[in-house]
Length: 156
Image (cartoon, rainbow, N blue to C red):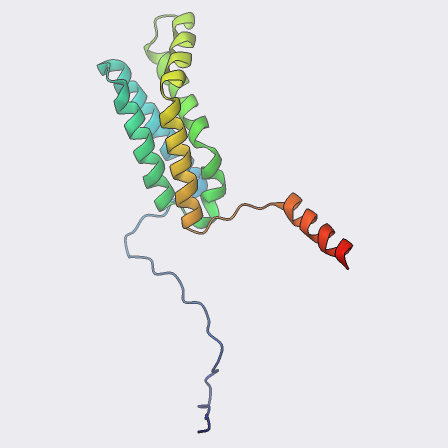
């Protein structure tokens, strides 16, 4: 059986389909995702300071890490992957500066908040990295590429 080719059609090559984007869906830039993560961390910590329920801020932080990573453009994931601990620290410092009676209490409050939220910080950061890798983020590793090319040139 012979294959015939229709005029104007290229057989054998496939172009990748563009990703479907739902109308009305939200996509964040890297900066927007960082700001959203900071805002959620700050508000969660502020509410936790006023109500006394510290787990609320931690749960809000982890949930926001997952949601923000899902809605960020692939091009903005590089900035987002490194920022969850920084956003939480900054939110904690600002919330303590607002709610603490003096500077020493604010400093102690920041350290206590970071110490008690360590597991949640690791969980949120790991969740961000896993979702980002699943969505197509691949970190640039120039040192690894240089080592691989050096190794292949030595083998020849």
